[in-house]
Image (tube, rainbow, N blue to C red; front, side, top):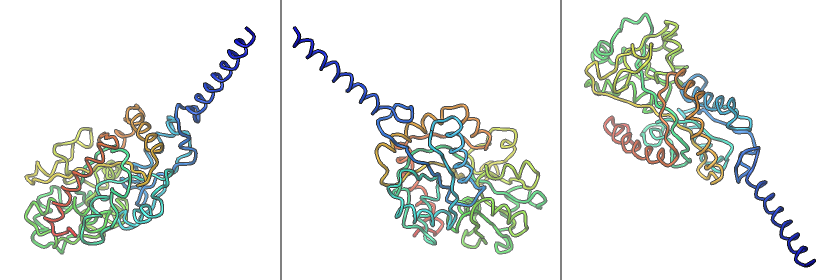
Length: 340
């Protein structure tokens, strides 16, 4: 009888220790998680200057995650401009390919820069781990408020007559996203895109500064980057590259390229990426965390405030989408004579 009691006591003790170990192993930072990740500060990189679409997305992403405590560790945003994202990508793909604590925001340039002829990058989305698509945006053709141009066709007619007399500016390198947004309507209008005078700046805010300083006649950029300047009466939008008019008090006033008789459309997605050799634990953490984020009222409010369109894809769906986009961009660059 004493032996049975002793055995029962031992078994009870073992069970208690096992349960304690399981409980301890499944909880980190007060959350159910088999991994200790993240146990360090997280850096979100915007591979551009401040004020552009990447910068705004990175800051909104980090801000909401911190405010609603979906991420307990400190989160910082870094700006790493240069070459429309190519400088950062070269560093990240070679020096940070297993750095789980450094994520970055990107959009079509991660594909375009890898495929274009001039100033191309040997690194693309396949040198990263796509984590999620967060939003979609559209391109905009923008002039100063006092510009003589009030519609896209009048601008394109003048470009067709004297292409070197009009300077188009954008926040990315030749052959990159802003450039493609600007020349696509012109190309569809019958203008040789190689004859258009394009000047590149490091980020959308620099391009807008050039426009306001009379160093450019027109800029092509993402619509969300222009909203504060539209509200202040400094610029006007001649056209947006959405398939139909956008919703909202301000956005609905912008005519599309299509409704002006030019069959051109360009969607700008934005997403979050991790390193190519990201650990399974880190990937699983961000898969769940981002999925939780996009369903919160705080994130939905932020997306609306920034003038973006919500468009979430998880890691696997995002990766498939990127492969499809790669084929489309390849075809477009080839048609424009810009494919490497």
